Length: 146
Image (cartoon, rainbow, N blue to C red; front, side, top):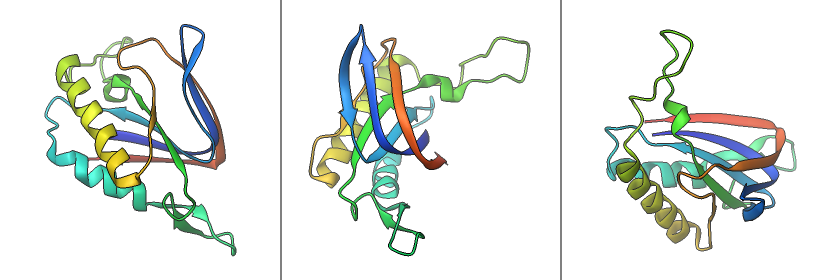
């Protein structure tokens, strides 16, 4: 898995001119599933996301987690995180999981996040053409990879 974590003050995802997911302070997660990923990776990434300390404390140090600030999460599937641009000019996506496998893990990941967070996780629509808007706070952007 590859996850791009963006600390945001707000973010939303739109499909067919309708906002389908929206958050205020929290994380926008762009999630790519590799063809060899299994459910084993999901628990690691749930704990990593919830406990990653990317929010600032009273001393302006990144010491607070999403849980500490009662933040929200917006998860968007993004197979293009596995683009291979080493040859030619058009990216190849052979490392990305097939849609059926990716969707299953994507949905399980969201479910596990909700269970651990104790509240709804906002999402995009798997496989849809989406418009993602965000205000990156910082900016803070982190890449996580298994």
